[in-house]
Length: 586
Image (cartoon, rainbow, N blue to C red):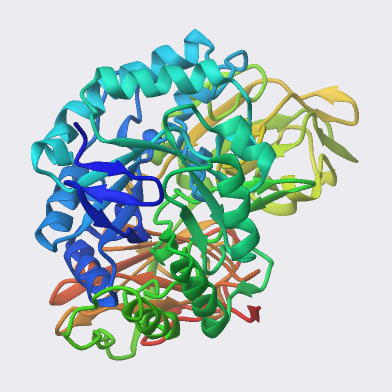
């Protein structure tokens, strides 16, 4: 029998009433050495539960494998939650959305153009079952039936917004049960009748997602499910940002008033997000409605606990609301964490990317350009290189466009940029001589995480022509940039070419503390500190700083590496004490 059960209007944990007051906190967006701190702060705000998704794509980067260490050590995270006295809502997908690369579906799976994702297509369910065969055994000791903290497990995720394959949902529920999951199962859908009907299953608790219109949303949920607990499984108290947009915020008093309405109605709640964290490395997702729109590196979400783990205005406002409805620890609210003193980093060594691409990746020779999927590459960049056989002015045409952003060079000189979000496919160029080298550096800006375009290919998506004639014979350099050791840095000098290049500098740290990397004068690229991949920067904004977690730093000498894709007017970077997520949109 599951530890958590339902009554006509609420939850029972070991047969005693429980109001779930939860907050979303994704372990894979937080440095593992900070998990305990964040969990403690969740308890101090008055939460009795935390919720997390489980990203299939990073736990199983290749078929038949399972990664459960470092940033993905889910068992450790569950142990820490239990040590803090917190219950856990586990949301293993297989699809998670979460503004996460590909919605959490692995690229080796979505690369199959014929597979019907999130359906009872055996190609999908067989892969899913193989993943669950590996994932669930090490998690079973952490389920409440075995004395662990996990009291409920979600079936799929907002499925009513995607499909209506009830047989698939039933298969997934059976797959969880047959592999030892005894805990309460629940579905989660946007609180309207169509989504709730398509995404729910008989005998399984239905929960809703919404950020406002509390009374109407609860009414929709109750109309769909006449008995049982009312629960908002995602109470949206902030929002995410796309590159080129203002930074989204929500007034703390407004969000707190809606939280009070929820709790006054007797509902349980999962605050999305309690602590957002960061899309480190290449893990951000993207949306694609009328145009492709990638998510920024920060997942601060205007949450009660900020990206660096400091209590924000919502933390204190929510703590006051929760105290009206449930016990809140008598301990004082946590104070902001220490910050590194302002530090300047001089970047004195460099290595041009185009000249050294072969040192990073042995090229694959193809007749036409191939996609990242065909190169078996999940994320990062691909450099495509060929020669143009004629001297002429003309048009380069990229059949099918680019996925997602291409920088074009002739004999090493930049001649233009094509962007998927602008639907660009053609570029006028001057070829100065027969046999000129054509380089196309394509950046995967993040896999679509919502809707029918999940799994859209990356890289060059078809043949390339110049004045109507196909260019053949390409060297394709896959650049996932997982290892920067081969980069041949040399001192900066007056002959250093402009263009895509790695830059390296060192800086001293006394006592490691959180800090934020500011890059005035830099344009677009990636940043690493001591080999830890902080993520993408871009002067398009809104985000202007990158979060550097304290555990990434070490006393004494530290290394900063930037991959700058364009030109820079600076030879230095700054470490500052205050984040800058851009101008706000309320």
